[in-house]
Length: 256
Ligand code: DGL
View (tube, rainbow, N blue to C red):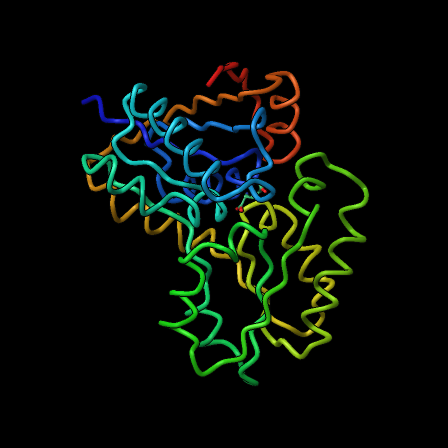
């Protein structure tokens, strides 16, 4: 039986943290992944721009057969998830919602630090999640300009930025630190080292379980395929896939 592939997108490599976890729980499903590296970083654009662009990338994934789409980017989820669900009611979307509920359950002192892009904090989604799950907590928001871009580029400045941003929220008393940008999950060990005794919450495994719940079609025992696409340089993306996931692939180049 041929089943619809799962679509996924991010501004770049961040969503690979979700791809990796999804592969663990759904090894037999085909996946199409778009790294929108020609347009990113999303976190530094306006919500309106990211929303429009997310619609364009979604159309590409639908044209390639996806009926389930994972918005594997907190910034795009903040900017566009609601709009995408309205615009494409036939598609099942799984988006990134900052893991505030989980963090509220883990915090012993009631102080939750959240690391994300500016775009994520600006969206209504963030305020509503805090309202619903942590109204009685102190939520310490920390926009992290440059961090996702440094991770994307494999820039050695990444460690300094981590020290600075994580040091700030932990210094302000957070005993739980939420990773609310999919790029940050790729350097979770380095963030945990900087966080010391504070607990780091990575939402990627929970998002993958949610994908598993919504993809309810039966699947065979064979390994699912993965088609990677980038809106920038496929050679560079191929190197990133090898380095970050150990995956050898020939990404397609797509103009959107
Ligand atoms: N990976 C994206 C996120 O989860 C952000 C990176 C960007 O700024 O494009 O927010």
